[in-house]
Image 1 (cartoon, one colour):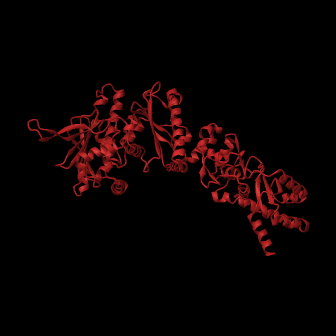
Image 2: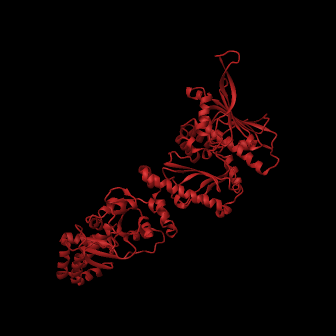
Image 3: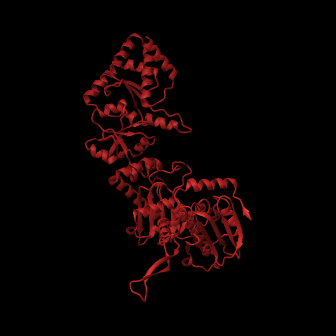
Length: 621
């Protein structure tokens, strides 16, 4: 009796066939992955069930081509499916038997499930007009046939099958020359090599070969011979000199489902007292959930090719959580628990080595492949910065050489070391904070410093100043915020002249201070064209004030501020006149100047209505 897919399943199948999978050839990869999963399940059972006599070396996936009947058959001797499992796994699109199996055994993580029945299985309908699934479950005496021609529905009937396992029989479409290639041996060989070469079970197929006839020299005859199409050895266990870049990239795309090629890969083999193979990738972009709480870091952890853990967080530190890859070590037990992993000496040693490999690769990219590093920095630079100031700066020495900041002089991103190379005679490293490069460029304090020929690093992200505060120094050079009142760039003569001016104007400046909420008001001779600016008087800058007050449950942090007035600007003369002739107006003038200085810093104005009214009053007179 024919059964119908649910309405939503029909729509999903139609969408998937015509939209989601535009690359038809991946259908074979999906089916082979499912076959590998089925074998994994039976192999897993054999580890705990002495009644299962089949050995790992007896497992195989077999492909058969029948050109005459236009069928392509993929068979496995894995665990098989019961009638109910056929109904559940194949009757509902995106229902995954492999996923359920993993959920049921989530506390026993020593099984490698690389594919899933569900959407992947239905990719067969991109190339097949009809799909038959004949399956006999382990421990069952009955076999069943699941059959479907697409969205019209499916049927399940009892049938004969001698051995445990599953046969998937595809009747290849015949209305396009493209489909004929899937009945050619060379094409199947190519697809297996391209997509499934790292499958750990042999993928076998009878391949046509030729040999010279015994009785007739110079004449050849064709014959069939069963051949293993895949290398069997996982990619990470192969000699890296024998692996092409395309194979590395294909493995990454298949394993981690990324549409973009990775920036680089790190293939390592360790031998001696500790043995392990690792294959790590640095992605070209952050996943959609990378900077969210939902993101789960970790590398796939194997022991002798058997999966122990899908995401082993203990293998990489948080600041390298973007790294994807696999680690395989025979020195780890299959039955090791997550709690034991946290205390495992072998794992800690491997993790330490992996961290060094990642750091070295990033430095190599930084020094020799700058364009790639800039892509990396755009995607994951924030994570490196967070790694520096988290854990009380415990890891700052490991990460500081990876930092990049925009340079006022170079007009591009530079490292801290490159900054020092360009400024060998400087005793400090100067920086400024703002929302954008353009905003920082226009800060009066930046202009005052760059006019003296100094190079300034621009901090455009909220975390930047916290990072520099955590570092405190780099190669014995202190970081100095150009907006700090501790900046010391004037000559002794300039300082003495300014001191006399401020002492002479003390009553005027104190009067202005009463009108606004600042620690001090004073004249300065460091500004060139700007009338006013704000200086930070304490350890908390105006930028840090903005960041901390934007956080949930903030404590209304206020940086201690100094309002500096350019002593050579016409505004200075105006202030002195008002102090003599109209002190009330001077208070209003002070409020406007302070609001102007706050706006330049990107700070909010506490009383915008009052300030706009005052400005209008001045404009009207």
